Amino acid sequence: MKLTATFHGGTRYDIVSGQHRIITDQPAEDGGRDAGVSPVELFVGSVASCVAYFVGQFCERHGISRDGLSVDAEWTMAEGPRRVGRIDIAIHLPHRIPGELKERLLKVAHGCTVHQSLTVAPTVAIMLNPHGHTGSQSSGR
Picture 1 (cartoon, one colour):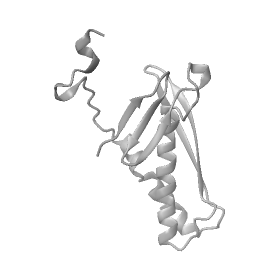
Picture 2: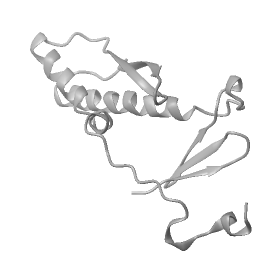
Picture 3: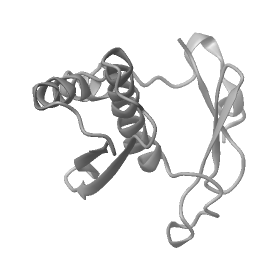
Picture 4: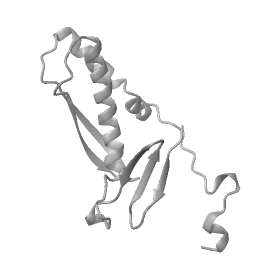
């Protein structure tokens, strides 16, 4: 799997994955133009949307309507190094679900792929100009 983040001026970077494009930027108070979600918002949003998907699939399997399903995410930052320190997820289902399904639903929510990727952290390899591409580096910039 592959996606590409490309510079588009200022602090804006567009992420392209297949036929989909997501615009990221920094808020005005951080020197950006607020043309899209910040990378941190996208990160937290990935957790929230993954939880929503898994809960929605659970509801579908158990005959519970997904109408009105929403997931809120709030986060706080931490230092040393600067990072998202805590994410609080709130699942909102406007329909009553049987008590015996509540614990199972929460277990499914915790099993979402993005949450599990945080729990068992992936290896992140960062390379400069892999495969012999030198780009602007060869001009001394």
